Every structure is written in structure tokens, then in C-alpha cells.
Image (cartoon, rainbow, N blue to C red):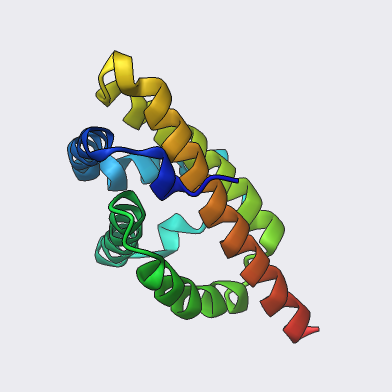
Amino acid sequence: MPQASDLADDQLRAEIAQAFRQLRPSMLANAERDADLDPNSRIEEFADQDLEQFLNAYEAMFMEALEGRGTATRDLILETALPPIIEFGQTSLDMVRSNVISAVMMAHRLLPLVSEERRDDAARWLAAFLSGYSYEAIGRAQALEAERR
């Protein structure tokens, strides 16, 4: 399976990064608007500054992958964020649902900001990134759930 970093040349990386920067200011409002799609969403329990911290972490992880800088940021985020998420009561199945919602809505909003001639390549990069992230996050969540049993 190709890694996300293998699917983008410098021009595509620049286009995706620009699209992300355009989308970033509206991400909090989008997350709040989309929360109703997830019956187990707890977004209303967090202050906006906490949600901004989550978005900053996601942005750092996204850009790390886009720039092909490895997974150190992603690893740190998953190592520190997942245990409290699982302790808070979210299950790996809840994560599957929320990741699918986020992936669909991210693709819907991000891809139109990429030039039409590069959009399919951008979609392939985004699919590889989001599926790789989801696979790792959910696998780690399942391991944490198994430890709690």
C-alpha cells in the first residue's frame, strides 16, 4: 500500500497545503456544525480553546504527513490523546464513526479548493493519509480497550 508521502510531488503538496490553510479558519465552526452527525459527539463539553488545541494538533499531524516528515508528531498525539479519550468513554467503534464523518466532510470541503487537474491526485493523497491515520488510531484504541478488560 502506498504511503501518503509517496503520492504527492512538490506542486501537489503546495496545493493541498494552500487548501488546508484556506479551510483552517472555519474548521472549528465546521466541527460544531457537523457534531449532530455523530450521536456520541461530546463536542459541546469542550471549551473553544480546547477544541482549537485539538485542531492545532490535527494541523501539525496533517502537515507532517503532507511534507513527508515521518510520523513523530502523529505518534506523540496518539500516545498522549488516546488514553484519555478511551478513559472518557469513547470506544474504537465510536472512533470509526467519527473518523468516517470527519474524512467525508474534510474531503468535501478540501478537495474543491485544489485545482481541478490535480483534484484526483489530492483525493488519493487525502485517502491514503486519512486511512493510515484511522487504521493506526483505531488499532491503538483497540489495544487500550483490551488493556482495560
